[in-house]
Image (cartoon, rainbow, N blue to C red; front, top):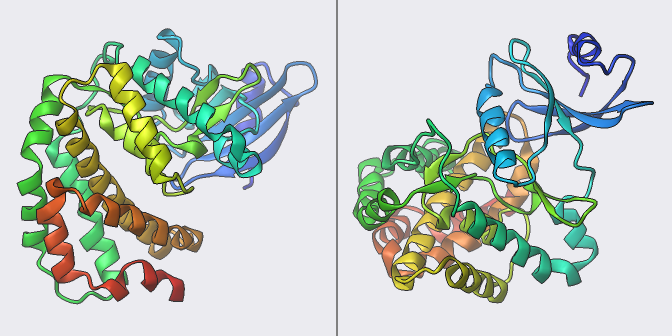
Length: 328
């Protein structure tokens, strides 16, 4: 976590010359974050997104869209697109996940606010020139399972064609309903990307991959969290809260879409976490795999996921699921 060599000059040009730069965090991508402290100006966050691997322009576009709609995304204080550097408003250190680990009594109130933000967000028009979260994109994501998980778990020769046919059999209703009324989908809306700000509001992070998609997707991301346990009871309560406040009339179809998107997202995450281990040298993600498998198994109980569940029952034995990762 050494700051990029270009950071001091960037900060000087931004009016933050002489500021101290301290490591803050990395994430599952190539982005890195540093806290910048200036004796006069206070604190800010430096995002380092190497242009060879990352493009900061989608982050800027979505941040500006969210701010214009009165959502709490970090204000962009300075930018250098050629170097992949952004200076951002500092939201502090109170991520929802660690806060709830210390004070579980706040869980319901925080999740209620997070759900209400989604209800509000989904009433706003989409940003201009935003790509759809298409069937092709979803299929590309679930391909991470045979490409990475299957190899790491030594599943042998599996039926890739049957894997994709199973998803294609489940997609049609979901895709049709998504195309009727797409909303802005932030795609990584969960406790570790939500910040509790000084005024008690929730700040939004990690939205650069946003697309136009189904309103249930970010709800799944929030309530079926790979990084912390959300009880089935709270999940049920918050799902009902969203449907009530959003005025969902066809609740049966919405819940089917929610469970299908849950299966898609969680199977994708199984592949992503395996890739982070094998390719990127980040083995700590392996400890999250049993929780993700628990979510997948819950998703599979819904009839909409029957063709996908049947494929998994045939090709992924029980000892290659959650229990497999305890020995890695």
